[in-house]
Structure formats: structure tokens, C-alpha cells
Length: 155
Length: 283
Image (cartoon, rainbow over all chains, first blue to last red; front, side, top):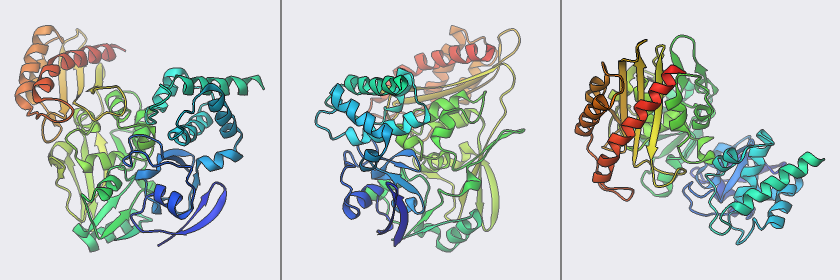
């Protein structure tokens, strides 16, 4: 079957299998390999992408369900001010170590900060509960978010 | 396998009537997509219903009615309003943000997991479920709909469309408490919901207690409820209620915890729930 959707601002028409996951479509058909496959069962958040602005585990989301909708991946964040600022802050704060979870953290954080530009730390921790990082211990990631928020407030 | 997307409830009911058992309803997919990947299910047809706006509504005039496609996130941020803290708290513990924004209340009910977080919370609010088919519509108590481990009385041509909750009386408090190894991303070792109504002098006049992860299906404990009514949430009545509750549950050993551990945490959990209900009933 065919789906037509918007991926990172561009229209795409893709031939998919009916039970295919959004992750499979992005990585194998559209070659957008920035989105990572971690647990493949909605536990780790490495595969998070935005569907109509909402952060979704693409490994357990139906590709067919994205018909007519807008999907943003970590590749798309390169064209997004907030996405770029977060990426730079992750690098500066040491929020990236092995890097496998990073695309999922960045997409989740873009969605969270678009909805609430200044979340409290408990709100932030709760919003990130579905993203697992085994390297950083999370502190550097929270530091990166704090730096991004204060950077935006200074402008 | 084929997939079709329903554009209206009537269209979905037509499909279900034609395909019956060969068809699997797909909403947010947080259970179905995993079951497909693990080859636990292999339907001929996936009926995608997620975009049916008519099943996303929440109505709070008179009784509280929520469409089956209301998401866990909708509930976690309090779309049902005051009086339904247990529902919000239970939905907030179903996975993380990524699964809450797509996972639906109707899906959680129909999946009928023994560990389903929202089920005890719905049970203490006297939830009824409405199922529609081309044959008509029926409304049954949730306790009679979920009848076993992953078993419901949904007929193959039926679609769960609405969940109706009772309206909490004045001076009522409710809560959902969950025991897990950590506070996030956990399948419950024990989940417990309570809703208590007090009179002006602090005596419990009405009680609902329901638990998950301690038997094949989430269930209410009428014995525990009876033991609490007439008391003040005092140690004695909580002790009697815990004893009754332990008689109603049938926990097993699994990877998350032992049956013995589950039994041991229930009395303390119940005591905490009663205290929180009393506090919230005042507020």
C-alpha cells in the first residue's frame, strides 16, 4: 500500500507493508537512519520521532497511521532553531556519549519545550522518563536543557 | 495482511461485521504493534480507527463519558477534571510520554492485561463500557466486560466506543498507587485504586477498592469495601479491609515479584490509599 505524508517538511509518497512500523519506513525506505532502533518494543525511546508534533515511539507506531500527517525526525531538527540549539548544548554539556539515545532525546525535548518553554526539573524528568540513556547518567542531558532554556531567555 | 483506515464509526462497524475474528482493531498500536512483531497475533486485516474524532470526546455534564480513543496523556493531564485523580494518576504511569500520547483508554481496556494500570481506577469509579456493532449497542459494567487474563466479552463484530464513569459524591477522595521497582516505565507489581466517601463526621459511607497485577484480571474487592464502610479509616478497619482484600486476590510469582511479596505490600498500600483518600475528601 502507498502512504503520502510530510517528512521533515517535504512531501513523500512511500510504498509500505500494511503492518510496517514507522521506524522501518523511515530507516529502510526513506534512508533516514538518524532515528535509532533500540529495544523495538516502546521501552527505551531511542526511536522517538514527532508525528503532528507529538513524540511517538516509531518502533511501535504504524507507518500506515502517518498517512496525511507530518513526521519530524532528528534530521529535520537541523532546520529548526530549537533543535539546533539543543544539539549544540548537548555537545557542550557532554550530553552525548555513545550517541545512540541522542536522536530520541532531542526529538522528545523539542516537543516538550515547544509546548512548555520552561519546564521545571521534575516536569522535565517526567517527560524524559520514556528515554533511556546508559552513558550519561542523565545529569549532563538535564544540564544541556537548562543551558538551552537560559540561552533562549537571554535573547 | 491488509490494513484499512475507518473514516467513521459506522464504516468501522461495517468492516467489523464483515470480517469479524479475522480483523484486529488498531488504535494507538502500543499493544497491537508489539503483539504483531512478536507474532502473538496474525490477523488477516488491521482496522485502523485511531483518527475517529467522534471517539476522542470527553463529556462531563451529568455522568462522565469518555470516548474510547481518549489517550493516556489526555487523562494524565486531567481532562476528566476534579474527582478523578485515580484515573489521571493511573494513566500517568502507563509507559512514558511517547506511549501515553498515542495509547488509548479503550485499547487499555480491550487489551485486558492483568497489570493494566487504568483498570483499577476505572473500576473504583463504577465504569461501564458501551460496545457498538451493526446489530446495535450494549452497555455493561467494566467488571463484567473484563472476565479473565486478556479476555473480554467483546464480540468479534463489536467496537468499544464509550466508557461512562459515575459522578463522585461530595466529600469523596480517590487515588491510584502503584508498586514497581522504579517509579517510571514499570509494569505494576501491584496496582491499587481506592475511592472513599465520608460523611461530615469523618465516617466512611461508601468505599471502592480495586487492584491489578494480583490475579488474572484487575478486580474490585467488595469484602475490603464493606470492611471500610462505617469506620473512619482507622487502623482497625484498614486491617480488616486488608484481610478481606488478601482473600480476594490470587497473585503469582513472576519476573517482577513473588506472590508472597505482592501479598506483603497490599496492607501498607491500602493504608496509604485510605489516608490519601481522607486527605483529598477534605480538600
